View 1 (cartoon, rainbow, N blue to C red):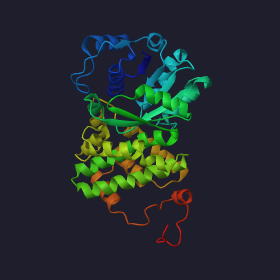
View 2 (view 1 turned 135 degrees about the vertical axis):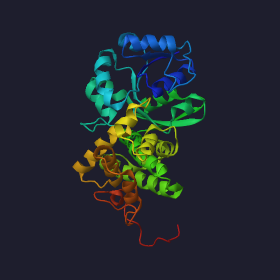
View 3 (view 1 turned 30 degrees about the vertical axis):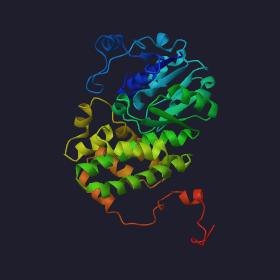
View 4 (view 1 turned 180 degrees about the vertical axis):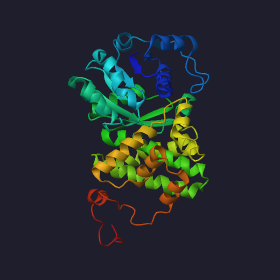
Amino acid sequence: MPKVAIVGTTAWGITLGMVLANKGIDVRLWARTEEEAERLIKKGPDSRQLPNVVFPPQITVTASPKKALSSVVAVLLVVPSQTMRQNLLVIKNHVSETMLIINASKGLEYGSNKRMSQVIAEELPPACHHNICVLSGPNLHKEVLAGLPASAVIAAEDNTVAKKAQKLLTAPNFSIYTNNDIIGVELGGALKNVIALGAGMVDGLGYGDNAKAAFITRGLTEMAALSLALGANPLTLSGLSGLGDLIATCASPLSRNHYVGVELTKGRKLQDITSTMAGVAEGVATTAAVNDMAKKLNIEMPIAEKMYQVMYNGADAKQVISELLGAKGRHELAGRRWDFKSFFGRPRKNNHATV
């Protein structure tokens, strides 16, 4: 059986480790410190995030990057996006050009506004770049751990690489699709967290399903507009990493970003909310990055802008959501610097012509 390294003892990292271990794959879980490794070996994962999870024999934990990455066919990077670069600096000398390098983190680096695959490419040697993949989709870790059916998409520029990763990750209840649009797949996984914050606010305010459906739909259009401007195929956003992940993250109480949105409507401060959470809500930092990108590109992104105002400038969540839901209607694809019409082409004059 192949050997796989997982960088990141996050809930999703451990979940992916369990999925692979249940296939009989030898999984090396890399912990950042000896103390963390020893704690995981003796006590197992944090019961707040991963209750009743017991490591099978196929999973070993080590604080040594050399041991973790020795002779593996793939390394999965499953760390918070804001720590991706520093983790790469530690492991980069142990990564070879034969390894699949799979990013499973959903966020943008604050400051540089870069996607995780861009960060990975900057820190790893050029010989490794052809093996960089992106894993994304509607994957709430507790459901995956419970063996409930789930799907994801793996994106790579080279279809052969994508298929290798697909074969490695596919499990009986974990279906993997392939895509070649790394930009679209990666942005879908990151941007949906911004919209989920607002969806949580809509739920926290009790505005109902009609309002939330409208909010999510407008959010998807906003996601696609930015993705198109950054070089993605907007149709990718209708797939698992866009619409699929957006639905799961905006609708489920298991979503950390949705939770943050709900709690903000109760008048709690952002720092108070995030400091008491077991995991990281990626949407918080991503909102700042997206808001910055939208300004630099002069792209109209009202939801991202309003989410930024609530979290970073203390704006009132109720007022912000009311403004977004009560915005004056116009053409669905209209927005400053939105290029949907140029992508899809102009509609035919006779919209009722028979084919």
